[in-house]
Structure formats: structure tokens, C-alpha cells
Amino acid sequence: MTRTAHRVWKYGDNVNTDVIFPGKYTYTVSHDRAALARHALEDLDPVFAEGVSRGDVIVAGRNWGNGSSREQAVTCLIAAGVHAVIAVSFARIYYRNAINSGLLVIECADAVEAVESGDDIEIDLAATRILVAGQSYAFPSLPPQVLEILDAGGIIPWLGGRTLA
Amino acid sequence: MSMTLTEKLLARASRRERVTPGEIIIVEPDVVLSHDNSAAIATIFGQLPQGRVKHPDRLAITLDHAVPPPTVKHARNHAEIRRFVREQGIENFFEVGRGICHQVLCEEGAVGPGLTLLGADSHSPHCGWLGSFGAGIGRSETAALWATGELWLRVPETMRIELNGSLAIGVTAKDLTLHLIGLLSADGATYMAVEFAGDGLAGISPDSRAVLTNMMAEMGAKNACMAPDEVTWAWLEANLARTRPRDFRERLNYFRQAALYPDPDAKYALNHVVDLSQIEPMVSCPHAVDKVKPLSALRSKTVDVGFIGTCTNGRLEDIASAAEVVRGKKLAARLLVIPASSLVLRDAVAAGYIADLIDAGATIGTPGCGPCMGNHMGVLAPGEVCISSANRNFQGRMGERDAEIYLANPAVVAASCVAGKIIHPAEVVRAGDAK
Ligand code: SF4
Image 1 (tube, each protein chain N blue to C red):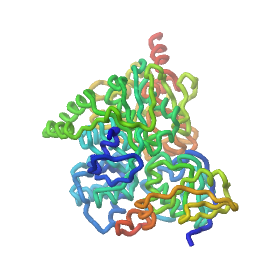
Image 2: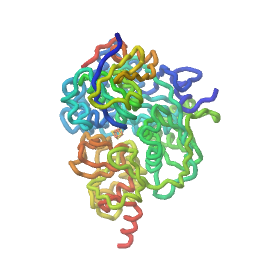
Image 3: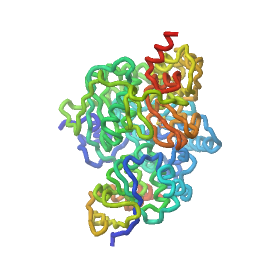
Image 4: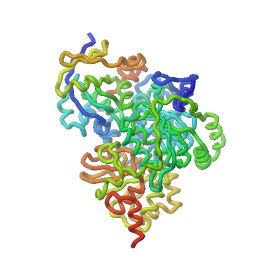
């Protein structure tokens, strides 16, 4: 059973890493899960950190995660319990960081258009489809080398290491 | 089969005859860059079974993001990095005050023509102005790279930007990049390589070339590069003679052997042709780099503070242009100047630029990133308006959510601090002459 159900938090285009995880905390908050989660989306959506539940997904427009390479912009979402980010497109370092930290990232413009904040959706990873209100939207499958890292939970466990947070 | 410069660089780094866009390859970079984030990377590295850095000679670590350390926490972070550097025998380590990683690695010849750099910093495309491949990566994969010496990469499609003609007086490489980002948008080159070419390149100085490759990070590019030419070799020779007097000939020869050039019939995914003479001074408005307007459309926006510095525009040419604007005048707004490296600072002092700036009322900071990312040393108060020569104006970037950041070339920043409002440098210079 690869199908999983999620609640949506939706945001717009060009959301940058400074508003996902503010730069002023990057050298003081690294691996403390609770602190990471507390600052998640702090400058984008002040109610997110309190309202998010385990398994929720973020749905966004173009170029999610542009700007700085800070990995906390990914790990703060993992710490907050976010299951996946579905966007029209991702900034490339964000995309790499997500895979290498074990956060599922999906590019699917049709699904982004079809949902609003608070909607329920399902992700079928094996079938590479997103289901919204009876409609199904296909997304491109990831290259096998990349899936292997994602499956292992990130590049560190993939290389035989332990994850920190 | 013909290849673009980026494809050739990646073929070399992955020890293949050739690579094709879209392929996933395993590269062995010549240089792995990190900075104040090295302690955090070392903590992740500590979770790996390897324990030792595979190629300590390929690591380059610069302390630059919060220097000198503003808090005990930051000082501890630096101490941890020094310990790691000693333990792992990393020779390319640059202390507090030497400057910003991207600038320092070029000055030191740690990176150069034909080489591949992966950096735990988003402006890693910077070094591409020397004919290198440079791309930003995250912390976990940097730790993995320290341990194994290799990493997966997708071969990008290449966008070619052909520059023709020359820039008008008072128009800089920064204006050209803001023009391009405004035109193509903040994700105009996502997942792509950018290759600069064309006759116009010959007239662009080394300091300005670095602005071009550096700013392509703000267009989403994976890397940005240009083939080495006479200007590149002359700069390398002069610089390496300063920074590594003992082996600079050897290093230059190594770069000459390693240098790569695009095939004349290489295939580009996109082609843009720019007539440099048509570019005018540009300003990027809050809170996105691609919210670009011509300077002429931004009359009388009051500013509280200006910032000249960063890996984008903190070099000698930038400080010289600011000094020229403020010489003999008094500033109406605060101006913070932070040279990109100790060499830049030294040269700016020798040329008298620092004296001009101080006489006008500017503040000079330790070479490093300064307030660029809101860490310290010049962060903004709520409601303040800053005009900066940096690369990003995101909300909260300089530490405060309710502050506004405008981006412009250094002469415009300096002029705006003289006038207390965003203004063309020619107007400030003219007003001064009339008195
Ligand atoms: S100067 Fe700014 S953009 Fe450049 S490396 Fe430092 S923090 Fe990053």
C-alpha cells in the first residue's frame, strides 16, 4: 500500500529559504528538532509552526526554496512533521537538500493548481500520482539513483551513517 | 560530439569522454568549499562510518560569515572548525579577516581554469569566471563528499548569454545581471548552466566578471562560467604572484594544462544576445531580486543606510567607484563598507579610497560577509530602508522582517548615501561641482 493521505498547506511562487528558515538562526540552530520546527516558515506564515500536524504536505508554486543553500530550510519541515513538498518547480539546491535529507519532493503543476490550503490529498508514490477530490494527477518519476537515497532516508543513512535529528 | 564549457568541465570531473544534459553522473570535485557552516557539516560527518576526510587537500575552509565572532556561540563555532581543520590536516584554511570564501579561493588559486568546485554555499557558481565549474550543494551532501570524495550531479542544459558591444559609462556588470534577472526572472535558469560569451566580454574587467557568474545564482543557475581569455590569465598571474610567491609558476602551468574551452558548434538549450550599450543602471526592489526597475524610475526613495560589500560587489573596483562618488562630500545616510578580502582592503587603503570613504563619514568593517545574511555587523532596525551592493533582498535577509532592501551597483549605493535618497551618481557629482 503506497498510498498515503495528507492535509495541504498552500503557498505561492518564489518562496525563498530566508522565509522558510531565517538566516539569523542558521549558526545557532542546527540539529535541535524542537527549535527547528518552531522556526519553520517563521517569516512566511506565522501560524504554520503551531498549526502543522505530522503528515501534512506543503503545496507551492514555482521555484520553492530559492536563495541560500541552508539545509535547515528542509530539515525544519521534516522536524515539523511535513511529509512532502509538492511544487510547480524547485530551486535546485533545495531539491538536492530535500533528497539528501530524505524529504519527498514532487513536481506536479496540475496538482498544485487543483488544491487549496486545508484540502485533503493522497500521494501514490508507486504509481507516481497525486489524488485530489477524485481526480488523479501524474508526476514524473525520480531517477533510480535518487530514489535509492530518498528510500534510505537521505545521503547520510545511505552511506551507512546515523541521522542526527 | 561537441560540448559546452560546462559539459566539458563535468566530463573531466567525472572522468568520462563526454556527458549529455539530463544524465546523472558521479563527479570527483577538485575543491570542496565550506565556511562557518563547517562545524555543522563536521557534526553530520561525525555520523558517518568513514571518520577521516578522503582527500583533505581538496577541502577549502574560510571563516567569513560572522567575523570577528559577534557572540560566544559564534566564537565557539569557529573554535570547533579550527579543531576539525587540525585533526583532519586541512591546509587550505583561511582565518577570520582573510575575506569571503568565493573571493579568497580565487585569489589564492585554490580554484581556477578547468577545475570543478562544489561548495556548501549558494554563490559557489562565482568561481566560474575563471573558467571553472562551481555549484552550490547542501550540508549533508558536503559531509558525504568529505567522506567519499564524490557526489551525484545531474548534467545541466546550458543557456548561452552572448554579450556584444560595451557598457556605457556609469553602467556596471551589476546592472547587466539585474537586467538579465528582471528579464528572465528568479527561476529563469533553474537547473541550468549559464555560459557567458561574445565580443563584449573582452571589455569586462576581472572584478566585474565575478559579478556576472556570482549573480547567476539569483537566476537559479546550477553554475555559470566563461572560457578563460587574456584577461583571465593576466589576472591569475598577477594575483598568484602575490598570494603564492613560491609556486605560482607551477600553479599557472597546471591551470594552463587544465583549462577547457567550449566547442564552437556546441548545442545550447537557450541563446540570449545582449547589446551592452542598451543597459542602464538598474535597482532591485524589496523583497525579490527579480523585482527590477531602471534607476531612472525610482525617484526620491529615502534611504537610512547603505552597504557596499559581499562576494558580489565588495572588490577594489567597487570600492573605488564608491570613493569617487563620496570624495569631498558628507554622507546624509549611514554607509557601511566591507571589503571582500584582506587584499582588497589593503589595496583600497593604499589607493586612498578608504580615507575618502572615512572622511565622508563611512564605516569600514572586517573583510567578510558582514550583514549580508543578517548575522551581525550592520543589521537593520524595523522600518529601515537599506540600499546595498549585495545579491539578495529577501524579506528578513539583513536580520529584520520589517526592513526594506534595495540592490544596486556600488556607485549608486554611495550616491544614495550622499543624497539620503536613491539617486544617480552623476547627479551627486554634478551637485558637488556646482558648490
Ligand atoms: S557575502 Fe553574502 S552572499 Fe556572499 S557568501 Fe557571504 S553571506 Fe553569502
